[in-house]
Image (cartoon, rainbow, N blue to C red; front, side, top):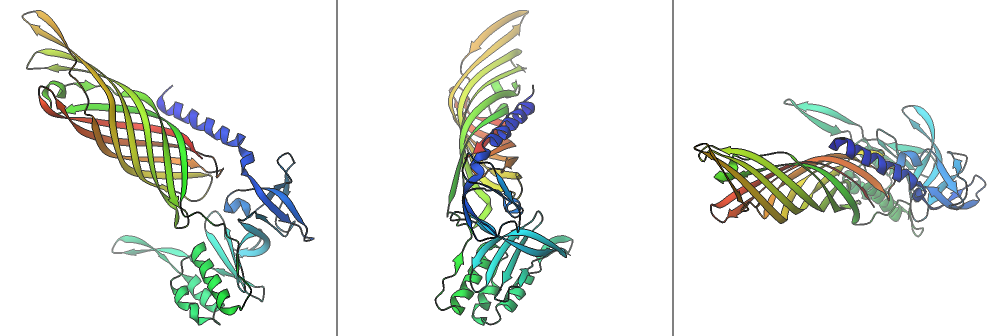
Length: 409
């Protein structure tokens, strides 16, 4: 079984484990019935698109699941978090019944809905009419270069909706088509127009910094090469396969950007490198055996596609390799006057410290917020200087293709 097949099997196992952990999706919350009764219990917490279509509720962990769709209940809410109410809206000239996420309850209410293709925001004033804020984008070409231009129609719509409060127009002019900016505008309008009643913000409050950790397994194919040292430059090493284990930490500021994060990791690996070569000047065949153990540290910026359960990811960064052990054995066979002379040397060692770059492509399986399996494939290139006791300085180069699999928690 090759390296890729092993990694795929490992990822499928992680997906299976995530399904076994399905009960962790249920969080404390309550349902508001059409008779205005409140049912306290647990609600299945999913992504924005799924939450808008249905509410799966159970009284406790051992109870059976009750499925509610829009207008079979008035709404539902997670404790100290997101709040959804049944509403009818028009999307692409069609009437749709959904659970709208209630962001702001004030003189002017603000709602949010995300479908597969885009985000939708709605404002409702005292007349009960929903006004959709739109922000279409189109591609324009300037001197052969394509640019994405946003219509920013929502800016004009906000000014119309809040025409009785021109004091907030400068804030509207700087508005962004996102939760935080639109919530700030709605709250500011409420604070100016209302003399006592507090504006209620239902949006989930995100932490300033969020950290996630993950154990992972890495399957590596590594190519070794020495340069600037004549006795080893002609040695051709075979690709070395190894398995390493490690731990990583991912940090992001979700209130600013949920797509970008910073990630660092440390992993331990053992490698066996085998190489052969022929030194013309000495008329000698070389056979090299090198056993190493090392710690590899990586750090970089990770981009994660923000929607869907299977989310593509990309990471680019730098790495540092510290060899903890490097034991080499070189066997030299000299041919002279039909005589074969064999000598063995133990002077081969990899450079103690290598630095380089790495990048990775992969997927996060975000079906569960608290337990996210991932898989990625990447490449790293590292090099460092060493000091041979007889010859002097030389360079060690490592190129590695790796497949990582693990899960964030």
